Image 1 (tube, rainbow, N blue to C red):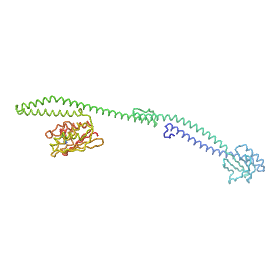
Image 2 (cartoon, rainbow, N blue to C red; image 1 turned 30 degrees about the vertical axis):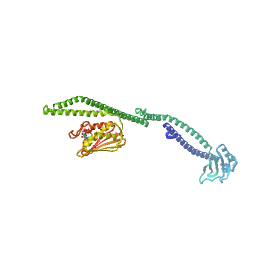
Image 3 (cartoon, protein in one colour; image 1 turned 90 degrees about the horizontal axis):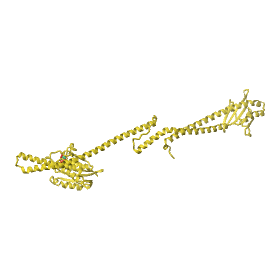
Image 4 (tube, protein in one colour; image 1 turned 60 degrees about the vertical axis):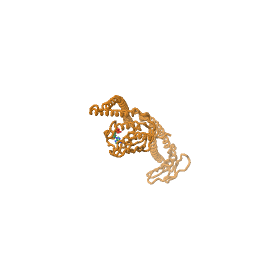
Length: 479
Ligand code: ADP
């Protein structure tokens, strides 16, 4: 069975209307029947009183002259009244004088006494009305009239009222049913429209749909307009988000394009610069070899600067080429054992390690999906820096590896000169160095290449350090 709360609003309205009008009508019928019963009983009493007076007046001489037959004749006239069940005349001593029972037999009922000072009394018993009245002659009670009447008329009336009540109830239920169907349409149709709209919106995620509004000022009208406003707001927000994410996506695309352009430019520029530079460098060297000591001393010095400058420029161009090749010449990723990667990096650095009497240690190392050659380069750069930027103490470098959530965090920690945190970003830029080449040799390309490799692998790199307290370079790779 459908529960009431699951019924549609139209149904609920209909049931409500019918129940309310049904209940109102039942109450009204009940009240009316009660009222009719009281009124009827009162009018019955009045009627019997009136008849008792008339009969009493007509019988008084028969009683006075002791003529029961005459009294009997008078009282028999009452037989015409179908509701009077019995009618009797009593002497003042309470003896039955004359009378009859409608159904024939039976003796007269015992005459009950009237309450003191009263000329009449009545009561209802077994759906019958009993009335006794004293008949006075010259101020004295000369006879008593006893009437017993059924209340069949009342019952007939009540039955008729009930029939009429039932008919009216049926008619009003039908009217309530029809009215609620019509009114329900006014209420339920907009609700239904709202419901359909809400369902369509949530099903299709289409916030451009609107509920058909009415200009009614009732709650439903207000609700529909509020609902449409809410949809408009969601749509607006949606559009903003879509637009901004589109322009974000465009920005990312643009960035990738300009990065690619820059790489291309760096590659072509450095590649094409190499050729003329090689000519300059080799003729400068030729000049140095052939004419050393043959020109004046200034000339020797100038030629030295020329050779030195040319070879430095070749170095810079090679660095730029290496940098631009990180993106363009990278290999596909494959699961690679980092023990092998670190082993290779350390063997490339073995001279520097031996010369600086460094101690290089590492944690157990995992196998990670990567471009092995590039990761070898990363460790070579980071460990190489750890060996290079040391103070009076012999360098100690430790390579750590820990897994955090879905990534590996690698660290290369040394006991060297450390870095002022204000340069934490700058050192990762191309050719940015914190020292002269006399203090510590190098070109400032190592960390920028390292960063580019890490980012190509979807990782991040950063440094944690304080001046004089060693540096810890950390980078992540997706596990
Ligand atoms: P390079 O080593 O050729 O100078 P890098 O790009 O590797 O170039 O490093 C950039 C700068 O970052 C270095 O010049 C140095 O000032 C600083 N640096 C890098 N590694 C360390 C380190 N382990 N300790 C202190 N400073 C460092």
